[in-house]
Figure (tube, rainbow, N blue to C red):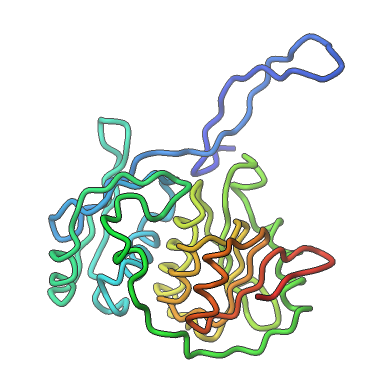
Length: 261
């Protein structure tokens, strides 16, 4: 059965026992350039999995602080182009035009990094409002969510190459999941999906399969996420920034342990 975001490829599988290689067919995750055009301005080119692009458009605009709320987001239209990529045309309300024109630039960002194309250290380390939302979440709920996430990763199970971001209730129940070849794209998709569904970020925590890097903490702070939980480890700058902005950060959330910064 076809799976959105993946395509079958004919491959050769080699074995450690020295037996002859086998011809197999395996699903590989889609990775494509997605050109983001906002109010007619070419803003970014991102390497992403071309699924849930309307969610991505809204989450991206919120993370980029081009808009303050989903009310300023008008529409998004995604379509494949002959060059082999995708065009994502976004329309924001007039109130978003100021930040857009100030920061408009054409950037090429790889799936592993959400900061490529930033032009100065001041832009990277821009001041952010501290996280004011608080949510009581017990470690048992984090373990519960981490244990359940694997079954919700449709692309991840099929390709072993997708990052996932999940919106979770305080008891660990997973409400929404979005996947992408890029970890920051998966988070943007999730933030957009939550906004479109009218779910309060302040009343939930977010679980990520990825290592916790600086740009993920930055996006979480901008979104006022009360708790960010990651399956893999955190970087030094991620912990520093989480502490500086009042974000509760938990990393290496596995079946039997977790680390709280």
